[in-house]
Length: 156
Image (cartoon, rainbow, N blue to C red; front, top):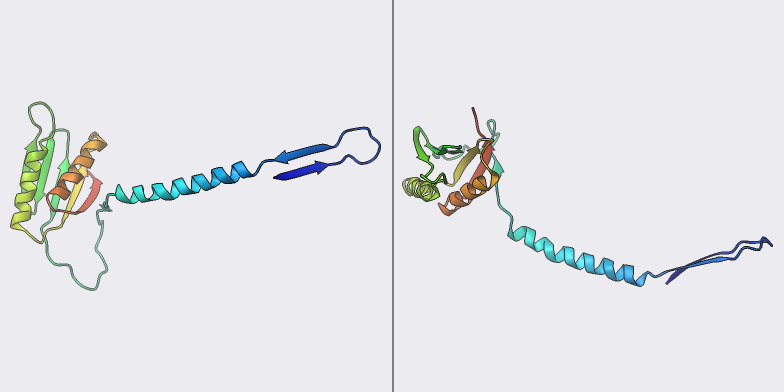
């Protein structure tokens, strides 16, 4: 335990002040907090999602990249707009107002089948699209074996 003793010198007639600070409970609490934080640090790695920002300009790499299909997916209030090179496919929402993710995965898998080396896709969402829908789209892209997902703001 730590203690502080302040003695009022002289004959002023005041009592000395003794203060004892219990440090053992504080050290125990600190040890528990450190252990808890170290254990939860692993969970942040498990739940981590790899998402990169879309490139905005030319790169300075020495080796030119292999030509791949430019694959863009726009998430709008009306549904999905999938652009594969010069081709564009619109996937409207279902009758109940939900996004048709099954049809999206079907189209993405068909593109992946035609282009087996394709790994990258750029996803753009309008401001009015809820974040949970964007997360579902990223998950569906990964399900369709397109792991290099870039997220960017919707143009226009």
